[in-house]
Amino acid sequence: MTKFNNFADLAAQLANDRIARSDETHEQSYDGAFIEHSEIAKLSVFEEPIATEMPDPDMARAAVELAVGTIFDVFRDTRMEEFAQQIVWGFVNSFHMTARLAEGREDDAAKKLGELARNYDPSEIHAVEMEETQLLCQTLQGCREAIEAMRDHASEVYRVETGKPFTATRGSQVSRSSVTASQIQARDFLAARNRQRNEEHAPTGPMVVVSGGQVWHDHEMLWDILDDIKARIPEMVLATTGMRKGVDAIATAWAQARKVKAISFIPNRAHGNRAPFLRNENLVKLRPVEAIVCEGSGIQSNLAQRLRQAGVPLHIRRIASQRAPQGANRA
Image 1 (cartoon, one colour):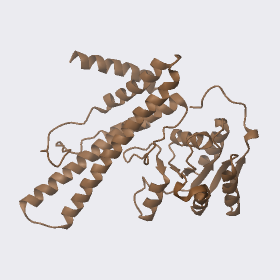
Image 2 (cartoon, helix red, strand yellow):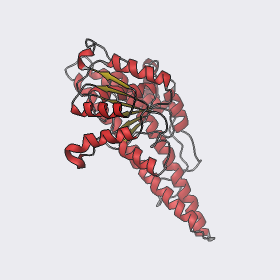
Image 3 (cartoon, one colour):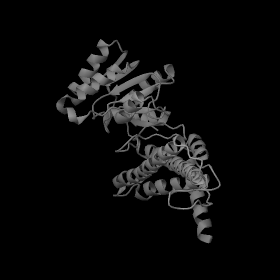
Image 4 (cartoon, one colour):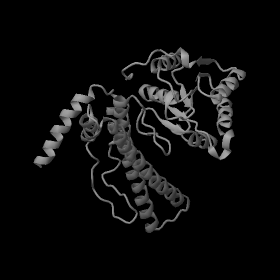
C-alpha cells in the first residue's frame, strides 16, 4: 500500500505542475469517460461477468501527465532530447491503437446484439445470451472511451511540448466521449457520409480547406488567418491535404488547440501520378466555404486554380511573404 501512496503523491505533484497549462476540457473528458455503465463488467464472451470498477479518473489523468511529462523532462537539454518526441509519439500511438482494437471488439459485440434482437427467441438461453452480449458491449464501450480520453490528453501534452500535432498513422482519431478535436481520415469521412453514419466520422459544418508545401515555418501567419476564419465561422470543419510536415501539420496543430474537427485528404496512391489532382477535384466538390493555399508545388497551384474557378474565397500566401522564423513554438 505504501508503494501506491508514493505513486499517487508523486503523480499528484507532477500533475499539479502541468495541469495549469491544460484546459478544463480534459477534466470533462475524463469525468465523462471513466463512468460506471454497470456494476458488473464483461470483456469476453467466454468469461462470466465480474464486479470490477473503472480506474479513478483523477489517477488516470495524473498517470498520463507523469508518464508523458517525465519522458520530456528527463531528456530535455541533453544529447537525447530529439528522441523524446519519437518515444512519446509511440506512447500516444499505443493508446490510439489499443482504442481501435477495443472499438473493433465493441462493433462485433454490437453486431451480434443486433442479430440476437432481430431473431426473437422466447427461451431463457436466448435471453441470457442477449443480456451478456449487451453487458459485453457496454463494458467495451466504457473501456474504449476511457482509453480515448487518455490518448487525447497524452496527445495534447505532446502538442504543447513539441508544437506539433499527434497524428496517428492508421485510422481516424475520434472520441465519442469528449469534446476535443478529431482528426479524421478522408476514407472514413466519405464512407460515413455515404452511409449517413455518425457525426464523429462525418462531421457536419462549413468546410475550410488548407494546403501548402512541406517547408513552411510561419506558424503565426497561418494561425492568425485560421483564427479569423473561426471567429466568422465558429462551426467550421478543417480539411487538409494530409501532409505530416509544413502547412498541413501547422493547420492540424491549430485544429487540435482550437478543438476544431480536422479531416485529412491523403491522395489515393492507387491512381498513380494523378492521385493528388483527383484529390484536389474531390476537395472542391465538397463545396468549401473558404480556403488557404500556401505556395508549394504544382499540386497547390492546381488546387488554387480549381478553388478560384469554383468561386471559393481564397487566401493565397507565398513563401517569400513569411516572417522571420521564431525561436519558440506557439502554444
